[in-house]
Image (cartoon, rainbow, N blue to C red; front, side, top):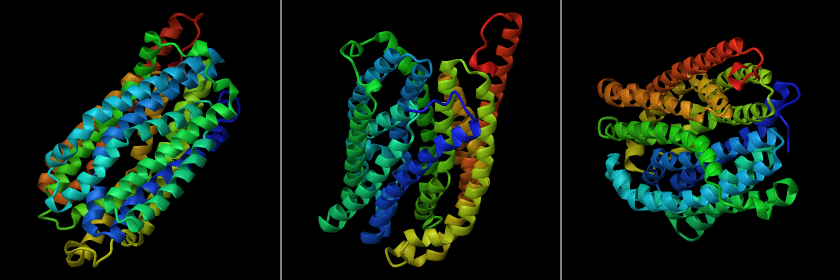
Amino acid sequence: MKELTKGNPYKLILLFALPIFFGCVFQQLYNMADTLIVGRTVSADAFTGVGLTGALTFFVLGFVNGLTTGFGVRVAQRYGAGDGEGMRRSIFMSIVLGAVLTVVLTAIFLPCTAPLLRLMNTPERYFRYAESYLFVIFAGIGSSVLYNLGANILRAVGDSRTPLFFLIFAAVLNVGLDFAFIVGCGMHYHGAALATVLSQLISGAACFVYMFVRYPELRLHRSDTKWSFSLAGALLALGLPMALQFSITAIGSVIQQTALNGLDAAYPGAVTAYVAASKIDNLANQSFASLGVAMATYVGQNTGAGEYGRIRKGIVVGMVYTAAAAVIGFAFCFGLSRPLMRLFLVSESSETVSLHYEEILGYGREYLLVQSSAYLLLGIIFIFRNTLQGMGKSFVTTFSGVTELAGRSLTAFVFVRYWGFDGFCFSNATAWLFADVFLLVTYFAVTYAHRRRNRRTPGDTPVAHAA
């Protein structure tokens, strides 16, 4: 367990974020393993079918990640306040709500797999691959809930290393199961999804076993295991806005994917290029997600401890690291886009790829260069959104997702229509700019309002936003 309420913010945030960063990278690597192995052992069409499920997967699993991150913020606040009983009760209620979440999401989305893909105008030659893969992923939603809940609780009490170790274990296990199921058992794309679900399930269970064995102060007492409507409401008040924010953002991604699917005839191979390029992009931008998680925990603990002056320092630190990460991310995409695209694409693996190989590489490189040029805009989202969430202002940050949705909808219905694939490439940058404007205006408006309030009542204890 690690306190983030004392010490140099530069050192604390960096050391806390690094394990999360490596964990995020490994998570992307084992997600990439599915599509890479499918592309190399089945076909490029199977690779594309598995890859284009990403927007729908993000829609559901992003909701899970957002909700459990919100639960973690509550645990971090109780830990920062030194409230052991409140921390344990929050953990118990998080587990109960996680179980309910699993049942509800599985019941809703499992029957909707094919209709959702049809709604997205999925090209027919990719459809059966996408449907089979997505069905298994939706059936295993509980494994994602288990891992994300365990990881976020551990991070909330300052342990960002243990989730990394279990994620590395899951990544290695996933690759091994991929080969066992896809090559050994001939399960093809079904096996890729099953490997992902099983590896995450085992990793999540290991997180909870370790948590209760390693940290006695987190072990639940009988008095902690009582249902509380007020505590459930407090957890959902933090978690639901963050979950909805992810899902709203994902709706924009679904709209984007739908627009791109409609370009399949006019730009042969563009969908395949996007699938490959998005894997590289996701790997390059994980530093922003890890800094965001670090900021949420840092701000959450300092809010609970009443160390409000440290929050403003933390934002400065976060922005310095974000600027550095944006430069490194651009250099990564600029220098490695073509070699990494070739890693995913085998020119003889399908007729489309064979006929349009160089064009597909060009589409992928264009997408990556535009994306990486706007990484600073993405980093600002993570810093300010997670800062507000750590302060307990999750509901406000939901609207940043709405602004992203507006940006992506604009590009889907306007940019793509008039500028084709070029317009699609600028869709994320536009969405990030919309969200940045909202988050920055919101943060400084809230800060200004609370400073005015504190000047009127000088004897009162300052609140987090005045930091």
